[in-house]
Image (cartoon, rainbow, N blue to C red; front, side, top):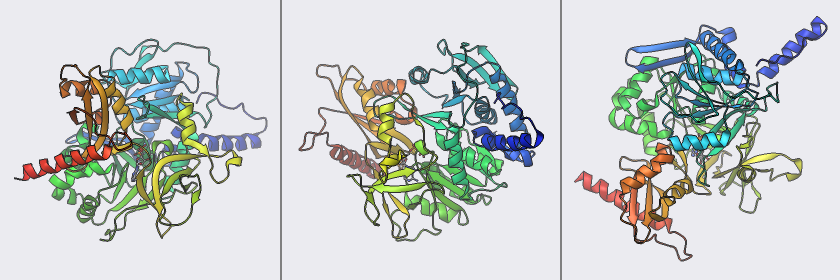
Length: 551
Ligand code: ADP
């Protein structure tokens, strides 16, 4: 940060002030994550192995120096604190340095996947009005509209292509309450929702997470989540916050078991963090190679429930690994960490999601707003935490629906996160996840609002009605299906055309893998779309496919 407090008059006060300033700096993302550079500058911070036989190590000292150089280049652009910067990149050492540099320069980064469809990127640009668009030297994004400035970064620094507009700065000093980043998730209204996280919130989350001692300085933590999802920021926080190294796995390699295992082996990963579905193909096709990775001592999963048969198989293949179930949502980065018992008892039907991390508290609230204390009763998780998001960018209504007055003491002015997740308390006091209270679903660990997919389909001129549903996928897991009714008199639309139409604005994981044309959508006695009937039909078809392919 360029602005420093004025030097105080006498030396003793100056030393105190320096110590105080250091404390405050610790509440900024970059200062917190680069702290190991002070005492272990030569320790690896990032280990990359994008290709066989090519492993690159970036030390903490190098990461700090790279961050400082990029922050200096950003400072020279004279953007005011809180200005937004689109960071269109996968997780790499330069991208990590760049996000830390944004933090150091007092700018808010918005991580975006290089695979983002153009129309969706334009929607994000309209929404957050960034000052600058950043991509790596190899990035292929072109035609970023005026007046957004454009620049590229790499190990050698920042190259500005189009300088951002200069505006008279209204602010001078970054505050820990400033947004550190905005992560976009699927939104029910058909527009992606921007979750704004302050420096203070994300650092509070990191502190709570680190209290679980999931990793130590010797660890190398593989992060399999793309940078645009906050799970990757959790992984970065866990690694750097523990003085360990992060091993970014390039997104195009994660789904290929041999490539994934090669990266883990060559980078010396000791822990793998990812959604449960990253393991499905590995367990099926490469169990021996996985079992041979004896250096793996930890697995952390998040995003959805781990199918128990697959989890048991993972335990068989990695018998000494500590497996941690991390539960939570982007709006608080996550919230709880629970060790999976090893071996998992045969009687286990639902995994524990534990209790909130130190400094936070989960409450269960019933439909009438009353707090549930008794074990065994399902309620909606409400989270009290210093790590809550600030709000949805530009969407006060959605924010009010999610950040709600403390149900125990609304007078206090304290807000808690209404998660939309259902859970019950087990006899041990720990929580068990029990599904969603709305139509948000997880597809291979990716959060999808069915309403957003349905709205996109309904925008097609040939469509009168559309319902999207998660259905069983051919190789296990779930995939997204859409049931579509075409407008009367409209020439039969090819489902491929509908697919392309969806892919123009939706990220790949939200484009239905299966689109079925129906004459009408079945309805319940109340006249609502009968989702259960559609799900049953899709389930029967999937079962028939499996039976057919087994014959
Ligand atoms: P994340 O990046 O943590 O997956 P998202 O915001 O994408 O966060 O999705 C959050 C939702 O995912 C939660 O509200 C919950 O419904 C589901 N979820 C997250 N973690 C778990 C888990 N460990 N077990 C079951 N469901 C989970």
